[in-house]
Length: 333
Image (cartoon, rainbow, N blue to C red):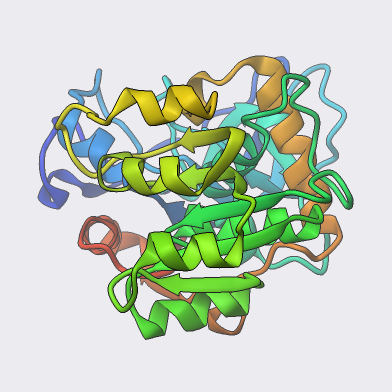
């Protein structure tokens, strides 16, 4: 089968197309014939910054069809699935014609949901779910009414995680405010379902958000804490939560502590790979239910435009994500 691999850390040029033997699934595993692989920032960062042990196939997310199952697996051959964390602490990601994963990491995909959507779930949607549940100690799956009465601020609503956070929050009954950096991104955030969109380059974002939510927002899904800490502290309601799932700088996070103390605010830092098993299971269940309800969508009309590449151009796909391409970058396997 065809597979993209790299055997040393570096730029996109370290990726090469090879022919390798398919692996048979062991007990508790399934083999998935990958149709579409999804690319996330974590994929190019891992490729460029972590030395692999032997040949590494990149990309955590994908979608396809189960074509072999190991002992003790209930999934039937022929089941359409979406795959998450395929390459986490494993050599076999989704940038290849088939991959073997633990059965729990292959989630049934309804017939009405495209492989493109399935490949766009994984890291973005699970991260968004974890962020939206960051203030809830039970960490239950999201669903209709789960966030009723809450106002959520999604920083960077045109990004892949921001898009999923908007859709999941709206589906769960929250009022959603989001920030963006341009009119084009504002249009995408509105298409995703955001109730209010604030262009932070065109207006005073803090003043506008306080106008839209005079009693404060309950939770911030934060992509850039270094730039937004002061804003978050200003717009959060007492007892509110900042759920940080990314940063665009290696610089330390610095902010005035007293304003956060006065409101009894909390910071919650998230990494989907190392989330607790209970939280991750709840996120998978919530995302699966949202897909089945048609609440998660893909495509420009849904606010998540797609840029696609063939398998042999996986390096170009990684470069596109690193360059900040808006929407979702997919690889046709």
